Length: 136
Image (tube, rainbow, N blue to C red; front, side, top):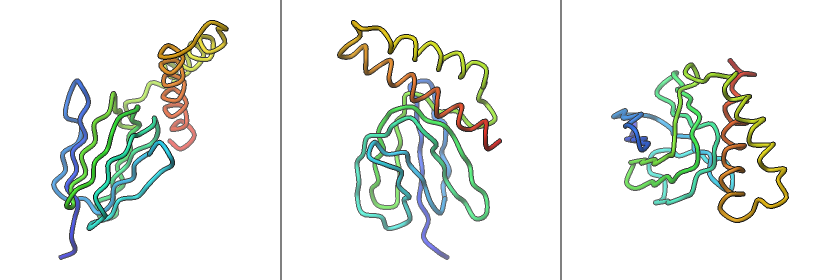
């Protein structure tokens, strides 16, 4: 039997995914997307808002995650994200309203530092959620 990955995805509210055996995990890293296969080198990375998925046989399970961290060690992938939603859970009208509000906030001339970063994160998350509408 081929080697598998153990995956855990946790948000502050709940444990979202615990699947004992998956074949591949796809992470939206801060510097680009990455695919994790069994026996991957140890890795710790910051995640950006985007599409996160895992593959088990012919099944692909997709979610949208917000910023967070991912660690890969000894065929185990642990993901800590601010939020995570399965594609069928996404409210696209709410995501569009969040996009508009974030863009309006980013237009403020006095926005800087942590407030600017938070507004950017909100925009990136809304865009990631809206992107799923095209592929549903």
